[in-house]
Length: 119
Image (cartoon, rainbow, N blue to C red):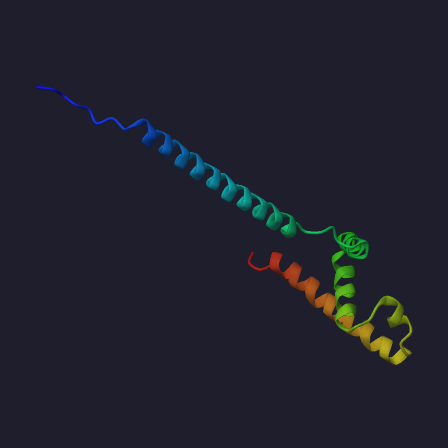
């Protein structure tokens, strides 16, 4: 009795190696395209440096007391700056200053009241 082994022929092995090499090359190309695409997406997603004016404003806000921040925020909500507030007629300026003072007291009392609520 003769035992035969099914062994692939040499041309078949060569073709399989070529096919695997082509598949590997295509896979490498796909990975390279995806890497390039991801790199481009990442570069676009990086936040840009804030403009100097924005950075300066942020630094000013960080150095303000809570009352100063409240004043600054209220003036901005009214479309005013300290300079434009100074240029208002006296009656209007007094109304705005009174409103700012009242709101500042209310907000600061709210902060203090949170600490003083139960004992």
